[in-house]
Amino acid sequence: MKFTKLSLVAALAVSAAFAGGDIAPVEPVVETPSNKCAECGDITGAIKLYYGSYDRGANADLFDKNGALGDAYAELNYSRKLMDNVTANVGMAYITTLGLEGDLVSGTWANHGPAPTVDDVAWITTANVAIQLANTTLVLGRQQLATPFFYSETWGIAANTFDAAVAVNTDLPDTTLVAAWVGRGNGTAGGAIVNLNNQNFDGGHNELFGSEAAFAFGAINKSISDVTLQAWYYNVTSAEDALWLQADANFGSISVGAQYAATYAQSVLATNDTDAYAFKVGYEADALSAYVAYSYRGNDASALNIANIATGAGAGSQSSLYTETYWNYGFVGQQDAETIALGASYDLGMAKVAAQYTTVSTSVANTATTGDMNEFALTASTKVGPINTDLAYVYDEKGVAGNAANTVLVMLSLPFSL
Image 1 (spheres, rainbow, N blue to C red):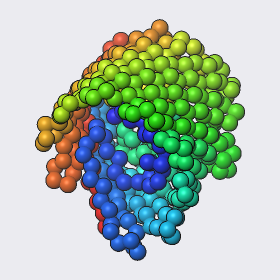
Image 2: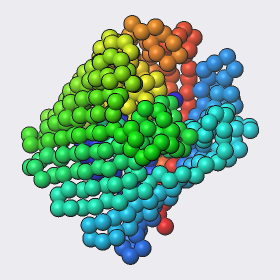
Image 3: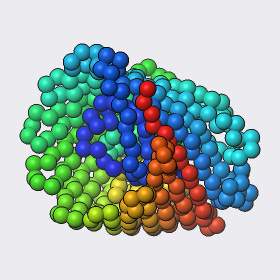
Image 4: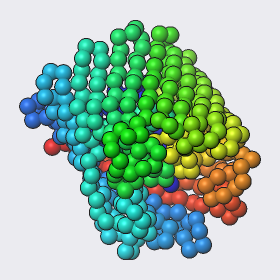
């Protein structure tokens, strides 16, 4: 289970320059604290407490232990300029159930290790060096990424990260060029982290750094006023090639977008090629925003879903298609999936409220993680003092008959600086 849609980032540098800080759901207003002591460096972090409850299953009722998940999480990040053009970034995370599994919950938001392990765990989230060379930024080491097919999913209490080398260049007018070598990542479908260790893209764990590397190349152009064009090419060594094309334009309060994505099998992750396309029309004026989107993925069996390759591109893996759901990932990018999504949000000042409806139809047989799906989500986001507070109610009908469920989510996050 997971939530929130990922907006495509115009350049990897946005997330790679410092892969830390608060990971906030449902687009809340988040203040990012900063330490002003240049000699000391910047120290930031966040404390989170997430709770979810669902009534899917014969023995699960809302707010009952058997249908609930919970975790507490703390993150501390340190960034220091070593010289004028070199910055070092490190980050640590700690996750615990607080013993809630004994009384209030039966599941967790992130994997604590091989099931059914719920031990407290600490790990390194960030360890990189950012180097500025004229109009080129290099980020070397563990970091978050934000590209259409490789990215850090931020729906949960902890985001997946990558051991990577990223170069971002802006020499060409109105153009950002991106090249990334990605050695390993710790993402897995249905959970932001897997065993809190890194895995290669072929699924192997703790192998030599870069033994099965992946590559990404992107170009983002804004030469046309109010139009952003993106083109991305990916190669996962001996496994998969992928292509992503996207165009987004704004005409006053109206926005339009088009996406085309394709994967080309090389026999390890999949045996067939497939593609998908999507369109979106949005409206934004004052406190109101709304959108409607459509997507279709080809009827190609034994092919990767059009979804995050870094988390398996399968059931439970998030997609960058405009039509992605709020909570039930893995459906819009599946075989023969035709999806319609519409949503609206309104900023009340004291809180931002939103509603989203997504319907997926496909010829694929219904199971618990494939087939037809309908989802309706209501969300509210506000600040209670210094705490980012996000609430959600989700109703979904997915896959096999009788698999409908109500879900309630409470996500609290306290960003801080030292």
